[in-house]
Length: 164
Image (cartoon, rainbow, N blue to C red; front, side):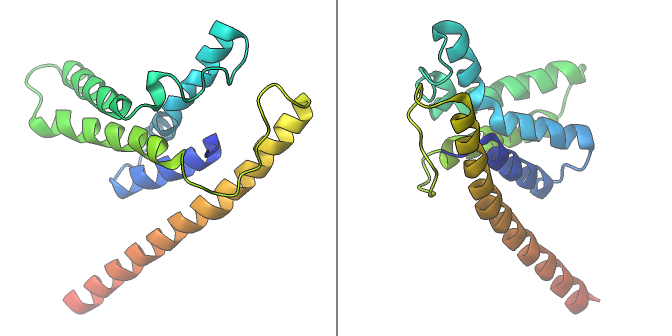
């Protein structure tokens, strides 16, 4: 299961690939990519254990990205006022769906995470486990993003050279 750092790296990369450049837009994309993990907070409020309901709530079900996308599209339309174009509605909706969907797709990936059963060990053992898993995310997802971005830059340079 990816850490918030892993989800943030992928959310940032997806937003950049979609053309988002503003710091606020990128920060929002990072938050939206990590949104399904709100169930940790809700689980703590409901059960006193942050992991009692983790990945059991709707936030980690395949329908959730679609719901977030629809809500984002509707909110975008309302905020634009007047007659928003189809692009004003669909582009943010598609991006939000993709960002939340990336979270759902990443969690079951079989990376070599350190696992510690919830409720076992000390707080510091939990922090150490989370830190180690974040290092794995940084190495794997960071390398993946760099690889993909590197290919995109090379393809852009080739198009510029051959076109001009």
